[in-house]
Image: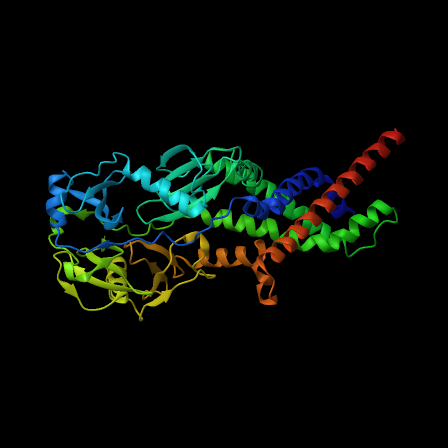
Length: 464
């Protein structure tokens, strides 16, 4: 047992430093969300235009010199029908009058829509705008976990510097932050993920070595708990707290390392919707008799022709219908469109009827952003989540090549984030308090261990 004790003491400084940094930053992570600004709205603003006999999109796009688009939809701007287009290879969207085909008088129409959406989601109807910029790549203040690109970053004036990230193509909220949240988020990324190490493989090696040291120290410490302890008060408290901290000291780094290593494995990219050929959009998806229309989206379908998806308010409900690119009506509802998208993505019809997903769950988590989506089951057992509003494959879960990633996500959510407590009926805030308390116990044990090592060092010097 003396060998185990010697090893535990030899690794103490590195393990304790690692535990303090990671456990402290991890304990404060829930606060990053808690202290940040909260949206006052969770759905896009509702607006509609009156359907009319308009020129075909193909003609308008040809006159505007747009041969292909990655996104295209009819929407209402000041109550008028407008064709919003994201030309292929371009981040900023352009807006054409649906009747004349001329660009809107507002030369910065996409920026103006971003500001309108930012005010809608943040509730800052009168606040001055300090800065707007188009974000085309993930960055420190807008990491990849937010998924949506491109987005506009709209920063409002004021000491808190609230910034709202919005996707004008889907009228979605990406995320919100302020100066305080950005500082804490940057500190978390630096301490918890070692983001300052810019070379990816060096970062993985560094985290693996530190985690290995922490795990070995915790494992040896767990073994020492089964032996007789010392009589000194400091050592007794170290042992007592260790009974509480030993499990999180093993599980937190192990699950974090598991997630990191699985994330380094090559993963097949999800299929991307094709560009929309302007010349193919020869018909309108609505007529003057259809009345008010919320939006009409030309949905790109992998391996097939685009499909018009029209949403129209009818009293308290929304009607939905589909048509081909030439305006010919398609029998069926959203499930029919989801079937086309899924069949194109899979290369074969789904193995079972599609199911509608309207809330995030353990398999399709909040990080995926898009709702509602349809889940299609592939022949290999993997679940493919497709969004009919955009034609995007939002996620793939499970299957032979995704089983390890699915297992990692499950283990991480249950043990690292504490969702194992959910069956007990705890609220998210209560769960965060419990997990932060467990992380704090690891910090206390590490600090007591350092105090013991320093005292032992001073004792040896006194003997000399």
